[in-house]
Image 1: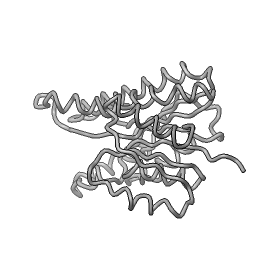
Image 2: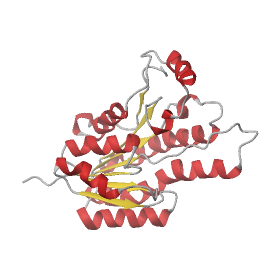
Image 3: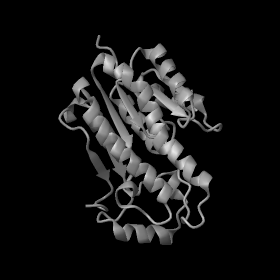
Image 4: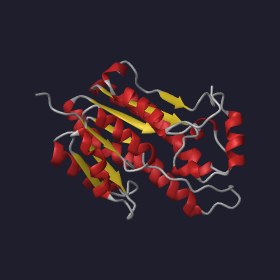
Length: 246
């Protein structure tokens, strides 16, 4: 019987991360899901994934802290012996105009979104290099491509992820490790649910497909980039944005 593959998804218990986890579960992967919120109901999450018949390891870690990422990866390896796919999805926003932005708001977004991507990748890559195979998919954003007023910290973190992705793709290709990024546009998640109808109307006016995307539509692209079907793709940024950025 073929050994199941293993995917590690940071921020994998809600929003896009959870849909990514569900997509991989449907394909028979064992899951390592990371969370940080004290309010996360890990038992309910495990129940959600029972129908797929896969093993699910749910671990708490703040991705901005290198040692917590190191422990997270060690626990995953101890449980499954390998990590085939890493999805760096964990991210936050702390929006504000630059003239009023506090230093902490800038630092925290960079620490989680960008440094967190480094922390996780740095700890997973040695295991992938030893196996001479693996896939890394980093979740960026169209805001990292075109910028957005009031989101200079978020845009900087997501643009940094794009540069990080392209550099790693060149660095790791000799070990048969592919690295790509997905840049979602406006996706219907908790982050966008707080927007007023007026704001949503303005958003739709900027999107050729005239709607927000669904988290599962992002998840499908993440899975594709991790699968052998995309074996000749590395160092790319795929926008999932309804045509907002062309």
